[in-house]
Image 1 (tube, rainbow, N blue to C red):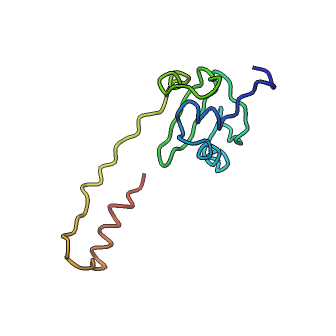
Image 2: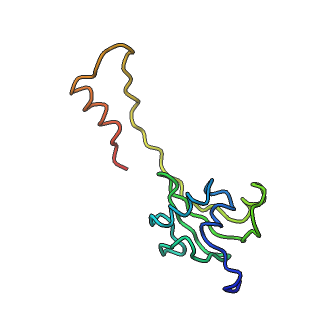
Image 3: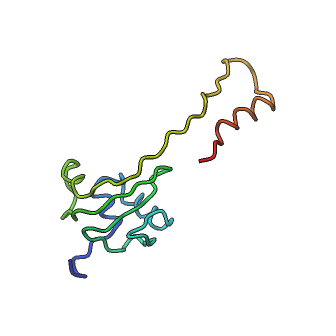
Length: 124
């Protein structure tokens, strides 16, 4: 792929259905949440076959290997063949159950709030 045919990483992320909108992919690149071959990249960084793309989509980490670059927007089935997903399996966090309060039980006490926060802020 020559410089005249370079393909932007934000376009690629959108066209292979890893982000729903290009602006989301652009914001992720600007926020430093996208890496190509271990380097943080800007939205206009070129992407080529065999590049390793790592990014965070929300709180979920994804790692994919580029297998191809589409000519433009493709059908989802075809677009998803443009990469191989090598995302490591993330362990499930057991929070021990969710704290529920009865409806109409009033405001929680300070102790009840601390117990609820203990379940929400489980270290990852």
